[in-house]
Image (cartoon, rainbow, N blue to C red; front, side, top):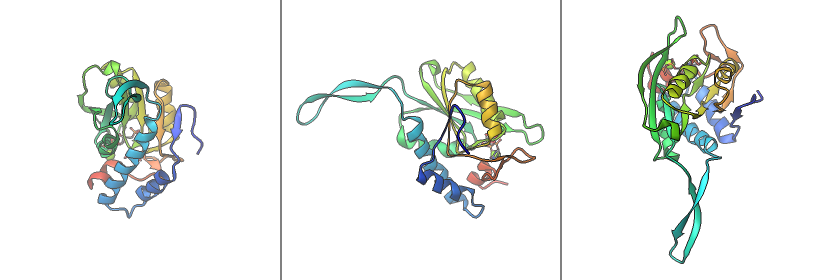
Length: 212
Ligand SMILES: O=P(O)(O)OC[C@H]1O[C@H](OP(=O)(O)OP(=O)(O)O)[C@H](O)[C@@H]1O
Ligand SMILES: O=c1cc[nH]c(=O)[nH]1
Ligand SMILES: [Mg+2]
């Protein structure tokens, strides 16, 4: 599917290959976890592609020169628990000094409402770019709730990174938060009667942690 306005579909062959392996029901928990981490690293490379740079003086063994470094305060990775944790290490591989925020949410299977159980963020959120991570954007309920809470806590410059998105989730998120661009590795056909992405990859949290 073509990416709608505000969505960057990362179609790099490595990402697409790893995503196919994630979809495979026969992929083990161990491999699933490794693949989520690896895809997260590749998505991190893309979502940080336009970070602002500033110049600073650096003394090489041969002479003094000016060279670029990332400007501004450290990034924040905001992980939507629990499945977001599967992506966190992969993101931190590329930006080890990032701050980490945690938004504990689960989607009630009956009502499909987002239920918050934990919220902990770093200081000065307003001055940092906040990259929200969760492998799945299905109905969009969880992502919308997480963005709302992060904005209440001061975040102003937000991006959302997921592995798989449904068109319904993209529409819901872009509708409520048009200021928040999305990066993803795949956009699937839609949702089933239980709000699962189809064809999808199943329940990301359960597959990451071997639950259910
Ligand atoms: O777009 P939505 O319809 O809200 O669905 C997506 C949410 O569902 C999954 O979490 P889940 O509620 O299964 O919690 P878990 O990470 O603890 O398994 C996933 O990690 C998202 O947070
Ligand atoms: O397909 C889906 C939808 C919500 N949450 C998941 O983990 N998978
Ligand atoms: Mg789950």
